[in-house]
Picture (spheres, helix red, strand yellow):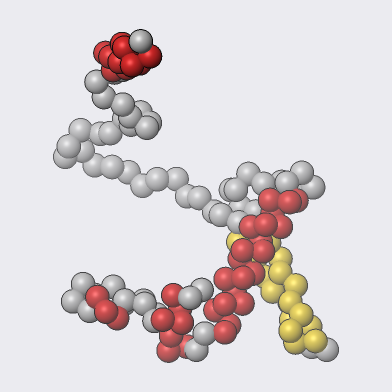
Length: 121
């Protein structure tokens, strides 16, 4: 009885589902039509850095929220989380040697795409 009910429900649901499902509705231009540039987006970024002479390992970062929609005083937790991620990227770049800060995009050298140390970041 349960199998029959389950089979019936499954059949009904399959019959009622639309033929095509889309994650989002896209309005694409006709093929051959020129597509203009998208609007500029400025993410949350560091604008300035202060290094203290008495403690060279102490940094102060000045952050610009850009177009992220985050507002100081309202979204302080989100700003701190995103800033923390940027600080980690910055500190990781300081620990890598200059010769390891490159990415090889040649399709003929698939074994040399990314240095191993850079991949660990």
